[in-house]
Length: 547
Image (cartoon, rainbow, N blue to C red):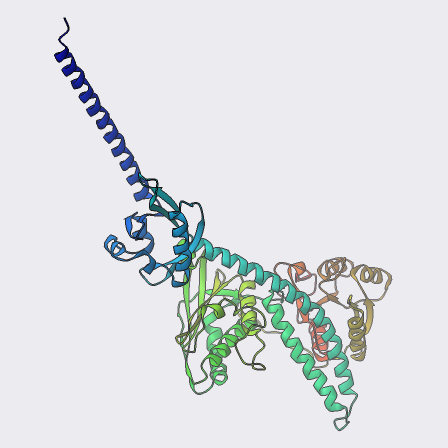
């Protein structure tokens, strides 16, 4: 017979053992899950937090400390909302209320304070965790640091905006320069035909003055849009600064102290000296205007390397390598973040009406970018401003100065000039100016017509004066072809617009001659004499000049 007592006892023992084994496996699996959770949370780049219904952090992943710089104790003792930017707290509280109602999945962005006082930008999601009753008791919050991404997005938008404004301003300057050339040219003819005591002489003078001021504005627009022609050579920035010191002292006034800290071992750069001097002068003027009660202006130079560390620190795309750093610092009123974001835009100015065009810093930006460099600005209200310009270091030594052949003082000529200009009014004016200087002038409205004239004209053509950017055949291509037909011909380029279409980044080859529109009759005559009297290379020797 079955002893039911022992049978029952044995069954209970087996059940207890089974339960113990089951509990053991459950605990083992739970421990595994805890270990996996710990591995995931403690090694995650994102910041993971567990928050209860009262808003207290139950858990912070180690990435909080790595990202924000706080210790575990500091995070534990600091209410979460105190670290949130005051302007973002309302949306954080609303997102938390939604999550505790069981709504999840909404992604928000907000700012959290780093221990060093700076603000980091985070992308955050909150997932509800329900208790046994089904009520949401906790929230799992995942925060991803997107500060660098946001900065890069903003820089990309800013670069797009500056590029668009540059293209627009360059196009405007091109058309405007052609009109100004006509205004200035005929203004000079009118002025020359009026005696000094003529009632209309002062009106002619004012027309010319206004035209020249407008021409200066368009040159600054072209500088911003990186469409001016540069004539680079190997330079020592220290020498440029030292040569300008006396002028800068007069420029900033006696109530300001100018000091310099120039690295004696500074490397060389390849840049347009005139444009670099203009950059330094504009920054000095900007500093002077920021210090109406006086202050200090400091100009420094040094060698620096742009490496991976540099890129991470400044968070903008740069070409790694060796650079020369030119810093211009003042102790003026400084700028807030909103002003700093716009200072390089054309026509943006904080000065009172009539006290500035808003083109000085945009010109600085354009010259630096066209020279292959980068510019940063550091400024705080009430502290001052520092502009840092990084120019690529050149591998070449500074070439010794060569004595130049003296240009003939007689500006009149008798040679034959083939003048090519697609703008009708400017073509007529330039032809008249050349004839007034004694030249024989052949005119063409485009490259094809110029080639046709050259083939039909049996006498020598001494010089080609051509616009650089024209429909059909460009000025450079025209020059190349004419040199093949007439190897002794000299070339002078002219343009009011010089962008990507005129050659490698708008840079002239050494020896090429360029006449910037709008030009005066005197500038035109001097440039032609310089070419014809043999000061520059012939078109064939100079490779017809890339412009």
